[in-house]
Length: 368
Image (cartoon, rainbow, N blue to C red):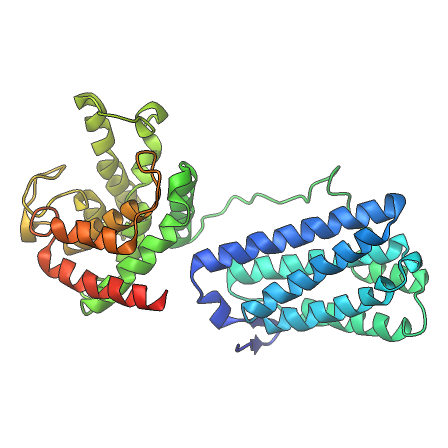
């Protein structure tokens, strides 16, 4: 895949364009590999053992393989260099020494930091990656005949010194008093809503991808940024619903229903207070209106409902049906979900939009 180098930074645009669920899975796997490497190094420093040597090598190999799988070539080549250094001790476990393990942890820690920066900011330091690559290459050459602790002590110093014991001292993350860009903050809020329930995993990004696809299929009638904001903010008001109501199984009282319905007002009011998101606010306010006029909060009907809200209603229902819920012990298929939406065309949903959404889902099924 393409790597774009711009001065002191580089980016991997094709990787960053992947579905958020894939990127999240990649991050989880990366963390598991790094945790496994740390466990093995601690065990080796304490009492040794060839089993931990092999486990450590496998964790490095898996980390490299994961980067290769998603096309992160700059990290694949870097991890290959790190792996080559460690392969020198794989055949002779007795040659292991603590400085080697400490260097490996510092190196993988640096790789993880660069990866996190790439995902969060869209680019990361070419200078730092190249420095680590050159350092690994020099270590490999100097260790061609044997492994020397002093070489690794010098390398550790160049990487910033001794690695902190993560069991005793966690990395200090500075919390800055700053305003995030609106959309970035909205997505963070939406992800927090996802965390409120085990039945909402990855739902935030799934909804954005579907509603953007529907908007495109309709000829882009709506501003993409306003639509994205509405998609991320439409359920933020649910965070103010008491858990006793939010997780209740069975029928709700009239008062409980009223409390739940209030979430559309809360979400729209928050968007208005951001400033510049009036269209998104209207979409959020209207997304539980029904095409036949039986929805809430204003009992709007047909074309009276904001088109973004009509789109959001279809996508929100689709994601709700295809995700596991407390009242369903299985995950409904995409076909079952689209069948249910079609059955409620003219009643709950705009029939013209439902017809276009059928094509969107058809393309989605063909890609699976």
